Amino acid sequence: MVFSPHPDDETLVAGGLIQRVLANGGTVRVVFVTNGDGYMKGVRTRVKKLQTSANDFIEYGEKRHDEALGALRILGLQPEDGIFLGFPDDGIDDLWAKNWSKIKPYTSPYTQFDRPEYKESFNIWTRYAGTDLKEEIAEAVVSFMPDWIVSPDPRDYHPDHCTTGVFVLEALRQLKEENEISLEDTQILTYLVHFFDYPSSPQWIKEVNARGVGGTKTAGQVLASTQWVNFDLTPEELATKKQALAEHRTQVEALGNFLKEFMRPNELFCRLSPGQALHIPLEYAAYFKRPSS
Image (cartoon, rainbow, N blue to C red; front, side, top):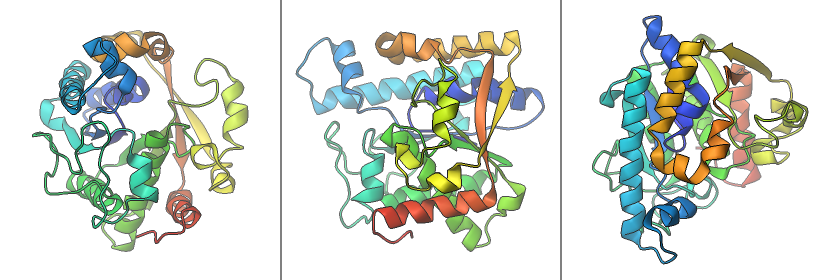
């Protein structure tokens, strides 16, 4: 199960891994946490105007949803293999730090939604609240019971990415406490997208072990001992990955050169131990001085 903060992250970081799992008879689900509907530069590039409306962002989110389905198809997946939670782009960190309770849900400044209003959303009854996002992630995991979970690394500099990673770990912690899953039987892999010199320079590896969640010191000691795993792609897998990325046309328009950096003959993942996975969300919750569940 791959957790993608925005449509295109799944292809950038795990397009090759997804293909390999399918080729070996495995099954894959991709969970899109947001529709990527809060990307101001992308919306302005697409509508070709500085003044934008909520409807512009909603239409952009629908477009990115359709692009994601196109990318999944090229990677070998079916539409039902994509799960769209519909949470607020550029607001995942707010759900963790400020809008944990559904009594005070977050309202997207872009779409003006305070709940997932897209017709394809996983659960339209939820609100933009940290508790609801945690529950939706937990429900997705239990419905699939993956052997491997691939999610954003907590050290990623992008707030949506690092906090999505912590939300996934918090959901796993809850499921472990409730005896719904055994983390001893689950591989937890994380990935970077937004980090100092990543992936263009080897300098990033010197930096990452000194960082905590979102580049802060939070959970830094827990993460310092993590090990990175190199996954080599075949030429055919890389070619298919490039085709899948091309389906994300809105992102190629806005971020073409950055996205090309990830079209490499390998993918990198960090392996977390069960102990690390369970400790990180507790430390991050303490950082924001709020309950962890």
